[in-house]
Image (cartoon, rainbow, N blue to C red; front, side, top):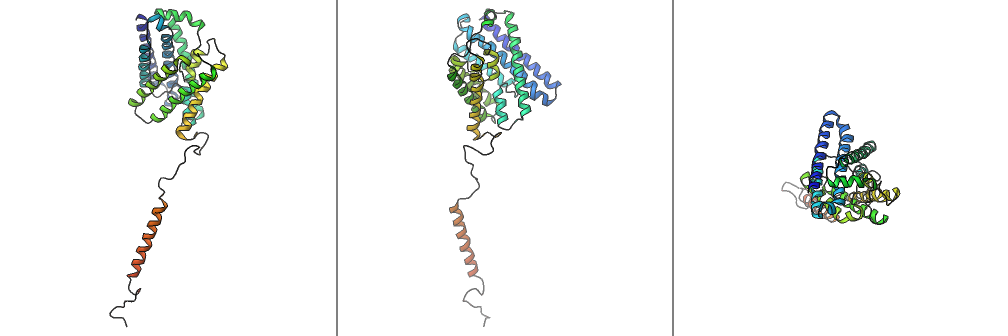
Length: 307
């Protein structure tokens, strides 16, 4: 359990340092610079460091520390609860930033700035995490430091199957985000954390269920077993395809590219049915005839003073 205690301390230290960096950048930087760059960079660094440490526990924990899948999945769920509560609105995921762009909620320069911030944040997390492992604070960190030069690929299936798995995970993730984006964080954060835990359990043995191109590039692109092009097909094109499909099914079109709804017809909800219009027209005509029949001089009945 000493290795688990060191990893828990690593998680707490990561959240504390990233929270301090968020507060400092929010106080020192303009709002646009904080929301467009600093917030995303710090969020990506926090997510990347926790992802690397969590992957170390998943790979080495079962045989070096005796950790069962129930402990690892519970820890993953709690980590994503903490991420959702502390990221301060940052996505820390390139496909989420591209989703905002496709839905015409963000400009192209702003999206590119967020993508750059996410890449820099994840690379900083990799550097700091490997430095922490080199201190060898636990047996798990010692083993991970020795194995860092010859990492194994997280892709343990064929390339087409892996791309399909990543696309399916990204589709479920983005559909959940789209349907819960107007909900309160008290409901949205646990739902997303539960979804991430379920997808990690189902797809983890195949692709590690990243559905985050920045995380996948930092964790597994340098490992042997597959070429860079194969990794890009699985961990970049797969999540991108799943995100596009989620936006298309949710919106009926891609607002950035098409104004016309391609899947769902939009009828005017204020248009009255024709049958009701016809009945109303006949009632109006009947009322008009009755009123004209009661006017003096319009019928055969004469008044008492008429000659």
